[in-house]
Image (tube, rainbow, N blue to C red; front, top):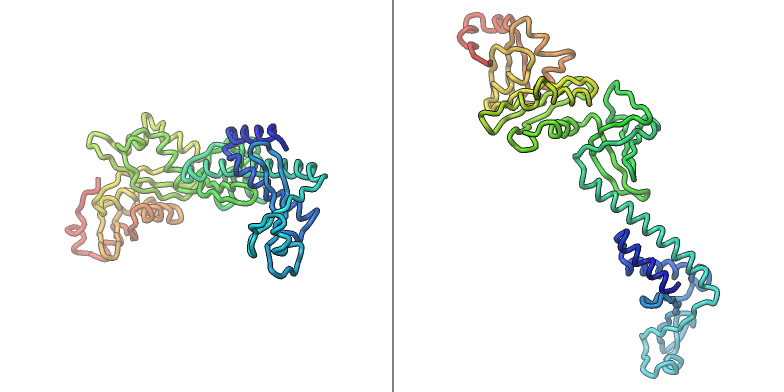
Length: 360
């Protein structure tokens, strides 16, 4: 090794951000292992690389002892003082033992260490980049499908779309472009592992923020999302300004904004409702598109009983209970849906007086 090698390390420092000292320390440690492996595994030794010239030297280290038991790692006081009269018991005496043919091993070892450190640095850079993007959307190209997992190329690395995070009925083909939501970034021995999702509610949230400037600007707030990926989602929005319609802002001119999101999610239906601080009105709105006649609220139990017209009962509940389930998840209330006929049976005389409310 020489000054040209040091210059190359300095160039790497500028390009990859790996300091020269860190590289040299790693090379010294690797050279020490190589020396022990090839020349003296039982010796205490040290490898030093000159920071100015790039020259390297191997030194054995022996402890000064009154009584020597192992000459490979110990030296007598008398012999030590022949080297330097100031040595005392407990001091360390170093002797250069650089092998003649150690240059070739040193060059190979140094190259391996540098390549390894460059690889590690690149992995760390990628990890930091994507770790800071957890909760964000990435765009990539489907590279391959293995054991039901989809591998997405992101440029210098790839993301994994696990089977459990794939949208039901969605077709994934090699070469297709795809958007996915980063749920976790793990550091592994093989580099960063980026786990993404197409089912996470965060995907819908980020798509909305990209499509609706009012959300990005904070004029419209996203109060909640409930999602059954590939089928239906509900979102609750609220405007901090009276003259801004939060639902209209999300729908967009001629429905273009929400339609872009629906297309990205392969036809997933999206109900956008206006959030209301009044829980009865919020619960009523959450069952959209069904119309609600009245809502009874039990605050402590967090239970809401909703009354709907007879012909709206199946719409309010939804296919296999989906509409009611999403509404409950969105509002945080347990929702019990009854038809007007059912309520008249429960309250035959008082029904009209108790449940005359307006939820328009």
